[in-house]
Length: 153
Image 1 (cartoon, rainbow, N blue to C red):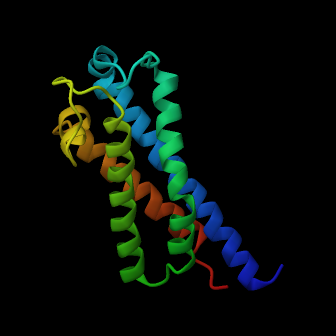
Image 2: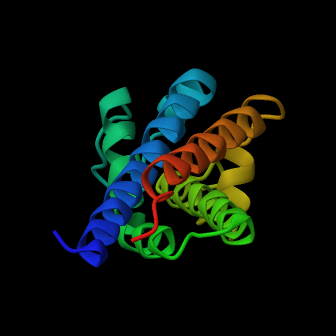
């Protein structure tokens, strides 16, 4: 396998790992800190399915799968620390984006829709739990990038 193909394969593995880290960390956050409230609200829309832990896992996987290719592309170009720091920041924004999409699928307490950022603030954010899981997810992804994308190719 050529060095470019090896680098692309490592970047794809890093992108898949990043999406998995986002999905699993957000799912753990939802189950640990928010499950009772989310189950009480239910999903938005007529005839929606009940809120279950497996349903939340499917939601997080569905939205984080969209980030595989962007994360793989960014991982392919990760090099010195400034690029890896930028990659960590973009990963954190990706985590927030997935959390916002998952939260936006739940019914609003007022019966209307959610404004941008409102669903995350109302349904997901917890003062200690969210920053801790978010930071742990980012550090895990930085370790994955360091491990898979450290060799030049």
